[in-house]
Length: 239
Image (cartoon, rainbow, N blue to C red; front, side):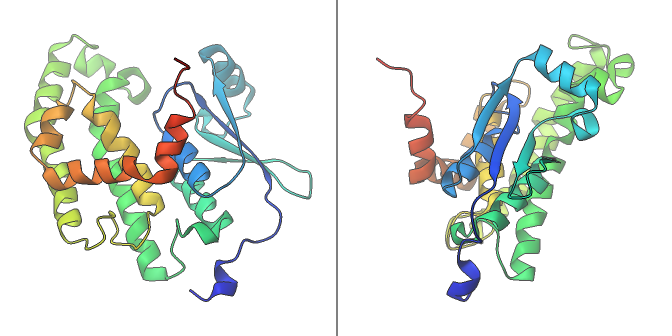
């Protein structure tokens, strides 16, 4: 893109990210804002604080992550949904190249973000059964239905999704998930997501990464990115 289009667009608005004190869906947003050089307040909610905000109607759709944006008008706007917030971050900091100017390339990035959500659908339904109305059918965490779903996740569902991403990464000359020259929002969403899945016994994540070398290499590449290393280094407990 022409330099004038990639330049920062005026003063940065005040940003407050609301999420829990876990990685989850908030982590790619924290990492992306840090990568983009955006200043933000990283608010880690307790369960009680979240429920207060949820019942008050402060959170659209009653969920987090949520990004509170306050620009020069002084009127705060709350953004929700991880993909939407990630795109906003990329557009707010165009010099970061997190979100492409080119419409086709942007659609390819969007598709990979959406595919990440597709990959996690069955996991979320099995893990948060009452939220999605599956608790009666699956029988809770120790139910026979849950055991069958988890077996299918390990043997069929997640290997199929990992194979999709293995193929995408095989075709990428840069090693980034959308074949961009620099990391895009899709890399932040999937880099963080794969790392969390690695620790999941529900899907046997360690075995999945071992059997999908391109995905494993991508996770290593993402976490070797300077901004990602800096974020975690700054948050290491003092010796």
